[in-house]
Image (cartoon, rainbow, N blue to C red; front, side):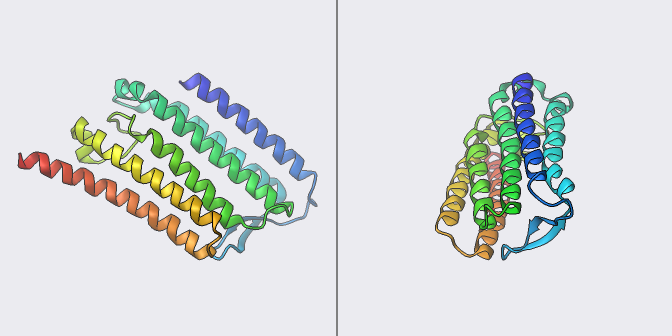
Length: 218
């Protein structure tokens, strides 16, 4: 699991660095590159080209190291091993999301992409679809998944919670992609993304508690 995922990460990061080198040759050395956008889709934070084009590959490197180290800190190693496919898929999804964001940043800097909020929302939606699709394949563990006192205490509650979370995550993801496709205003995209994520998390926690109460009642 770790070796193949690590190789994938290294290849993706290598492609990100190659894109950075290309972008650095296309913009003036004193240019100001947009690295953050407000809810209206307007740039509100800028950086020098070197920092702007190396930040995301650096973050991808840091996340790769984290994914490599996390299994060493997991007390339920057997459950993590049984969740290997879901762990690898989530690892891949995170690195690909960062690579796509990097491409989006470069595309905007070179004047090739204007609708940053739309593209970002679609990417986030695809991320929710990819990770939600494998959520039901995980087993109880401390470092990965919907970790509540009730899911960690009962494998059945864990599985039911993650099945619900997975379906809701996939549904949210498709909804975000649809909203991006029909080009609703940027502030609506931001509200849908943040509100949807909040509901996804809160709903999963509440459902795990409800399952625990149902079990306790019997």
